[in-house]
Image (cartoon, rainbow, N blue to C red; front, side):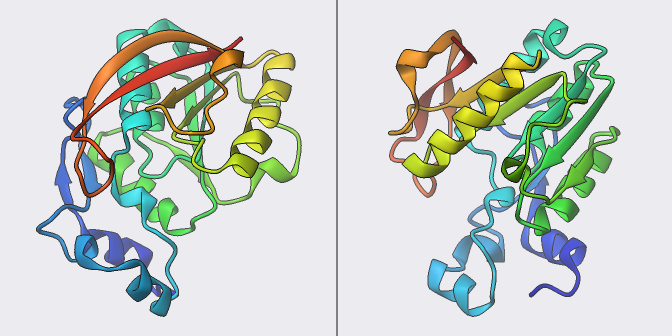
Length: 216
């Protein structure tokens, strides 16, 4: 366990700007930071989950770009950033004029990462590490944004069902994804497509064709 998550984030990242959302500064890991060099085995020895919060994933970058370019989607509305990671998408929502934004992620270290990243961008983002899939979607969320959620079939199917419940309750739901295997293409409406610069350390290509979708 990490005794001081805030110090851990600061020691293992550096402040930089994702290539597709240069308006936003994030504490991220890269090849010059210690966290980048920790193997999955070493993380397990330390009792740490994979540090998804330390990277700006392609789906999140695309979704953040879409929100920044289409502020009407979130302006004046209460936003939930599902599986927030670094908080990138929630921060983009606040910069686009959202009334409030809350990130959720089951990795508790995300709380420190999101707080630091929100502070770096002069916005306020709330956070919860509760597994929201265990219950109905929060009624207060008027917009739910979900990036990079289709890595594994059981999780992707569970999240899609949960998001459709939210949509049925009146929420606007957008998904950002770079073509993961379990993305339900036939049940989505493509809104925009981007070429997102990434790294071979994270993806199979240095530039990923990444889209933003609405639930069909």
